[in-house]
Image (cartoon, rainbow, N blue to C red; front, side, top):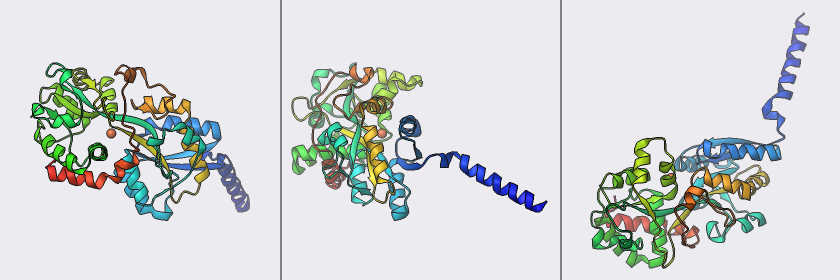
Length: 342
Ligand code: FE
C-alpha cells in the first residue's frame, strides 16, 4: 500500500515538472527594468511568442534598480538592464555592471548619438526636455533658447524641478558641452535667480504651477506633457491644455534630447539572448509601440512618432553624443550647486 502511494507521488511530481510552465520554455531571460510593467510587458510577451524565450520581468525605480544590480554583483540574475536617461546609463557603465557588445542590427537601427560609443548601451526611445509656455501670459516671440531663460526679462517666470534630478543634470551637461564651464556657470547663476519658486515636485507639477499662474514657462520632458494631455484626471488635463510646446535652440544646436535605453548586464548568463531581445526592441514594429505607449519619440529615424507628438510639430534636436551627458554629469552638478539651484 505504502509503495503504491509512494510510486503515485513520484509520478505526480514528475508530471507536474514536465507540464510546469516555467520549464516549458527551453530558455529564459531576466530583464531588470526601470520602465513600469505596463510600458514593457506587452512587448516582452511578443518577443516570447516569436522566439520561445521566456522573459522574467523585474521592475523598480531607476536608482534603486541600479543599486540592486550593483549589490548583487556576479550573483545577479540580470541579463538585460533597461533604464531612463543617458546619465543613468553612463552611471551603470561606470559602476561596472554592464558589458559592451556590438550589433550590426543596432548600429544600423539606432542613430550614433543615441548609443554609447563603446557599445555599453543603446537608446531605444527619445524624449525632449523642452520649454512649455502659457500663451496667455507670454508671447512665443519672447522665447528662443535655454540660454535666454537667464535673461532679466524672465525674472520670477520660470518653473523647473530640483537640481538633484538627473533630467536637469543632463540638460546642464549638454549646455556645458556647447558653451563651456565658465559660461554655463554664469548662466546657472542668473537662471536660478529667475525661478518663480523654490524647485519642488516633478515635471508635471511644473506644468500645473504654470497653468495656475505661478510661472510663464516650465522646463519639462515631453512625455509628461503627453501623459497629461491624455490624463483622466481633469486637473492634469486642464493644466496641460493651458500650455504650448516651444522648441528651444532651433537656430543653433537644437533642443536637448535624452533616451531610455537598454544594456546587457556584465554578469549575464545569457548574453546572446539578451542581445537578441535588445535587437528585437529596435525593430520597426517594436519601436512604434515602445515609443508611443510612453508618449516618446522612436529612436529610429525611419519610424514616425505618434499623432499626438506630431501635433507638436517637428524640431531640430541636439545631436551631441549622449554619453557626454554622463561624462559631464559631475561638473554639471557642481555648477548647479554653486549657483544655489536647490
Ligand atoms: Fe521621467
